Image (cartoon, rainbow, N blue to C red):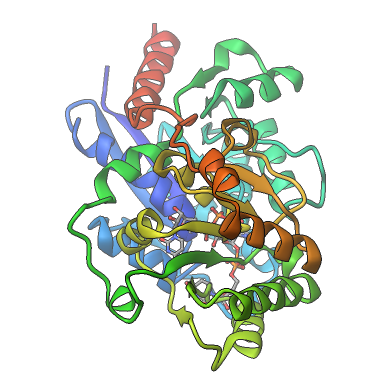
Length: 374
Ligand code: UD1
Ligand code: UDP
C-alpha cells in the first residue's frame, strides 16, 4: 500500500489544539502516512499561539481572518480556497474537527471533490438548532457529509446511530483534547499574573465568547461576577479575553479598574492549561474547557443553556448555569461558600479517554484504506 496522504484542515484555536495530536501522530509514522496541513486562519493570533507552542508549520495558510467577518464570509472563502488546494494536492482523505464554520466549509469542499471525509470529534449534539449557534448545525451538516466518524465517547456514538449512520463507519476514540493535555500540564509552572495574586486567594478562571451570548447575556454575567467579587475579598478573577471585538468591549466596559479582576490577552495553551490546574474553579461557555476540566478536578459553571458534553455533567464536574444574573450569582456564592458542594464537584474524573485518541484515529484510517484497496 502507498503512503496515505492525509489533509488536516483547521482554522481556530480549539481545532488547532485538538488536531495537534493527530498531526504529531502522522509525523511519527512517515513510512505509512503523509500530512498536508492546511490552516484557513479563521483565527489569526489565537491560532498562531497554538502553532507556535507545538511547532506546527502548515503547508497552506489561507489567512482569511478579518474583523467583523460573517459566517458567509468564512464559508465562501474557505470553500473557494480549499477546493483549489484539494485539486492541487489530491489527498486520500481530509480530516476536519468539531463544529466551526471552517469545519463545515471544508466538509462541503471535500464532498464537492468527492474526497473521503473524516470527522474528528463527531456526534456531539444538543439537538437545538440555535444553541450553540452556528455550531450545532455545522456539526450536524459535517456528519451528513462524513465517511469516517471519530466519536470521542459512547454517548456521541449513540447520537450518530440515532441519525442512522452505519456503526461500521463509527470509531470511539476518546477525545484528542486529553492527548493534548498530557503534553502541557507541568508542576513547576510559573506565570506573571500569578505573582500579582495573594497565594491565599482563590482564583476563578473565566472565558466567554459564544455568539449567542454576545450582548446583554454577557453583560449580565460579567456584572454578576463583579458583584460577587465585592462580597468576597479573598477571590480573584483571571480572564484571558477572547479577541472578538464584541467580547473585548463587554469585558472592558464592565471590568476595567475593578480590583482583583485580571483581564489579560488570550493565553497560549500551555499557560491556559497550567492556570486551569491552579484555579479554584472555572466559569466558561467554551466547549473544549468542559472536556479538560473534569480530568483536572476543577468545577466548571457552564455559562450556557445547553451542552453537547453531557459526560462532564454526569461526572459531576460541570454545572449548567446559563446566563441569568441571579442564577450566576447564586451558583458562584454556593461554590465559594459551601465546601461540601465544592468538594462534590471537584472530584477528578475523565470521561474523555486515555490520551490515545490520535493513535486510534490513524489505525482506523489505515484499516479503511486496507479494506477499500483490497
Ligand atoms: C470561532 C468559532 C467557534 C469557536 C471559537 C473558538 C465559528 C462560527 N465560530 O468563534 O465555534 O468556539 O472560534 O474560539 O466558527 N479575532 C482576532 N484574532 C483571533 C481570533 C479572533 O482578532 O486570533 C477576532 C476577529 O475580529 C474575528 C472575531 O474575533 O472576526 C471573531 O472570530 P470568529 O472566528 O468569526 O468567531 P469566534 O467567536 O472566534
Ligand atoms: N484556551 C487557550 N487559551 C485561552 C483560553 C482557552 O489556549 O486563553 C484553550 C483551552 O484550553 C481549550 C481551548 O482553548 O483547549 C478552547 O477554545 P475556545 O474556548 O476558544 O473554543 P471552544 O472550545 O468553545 O470551541
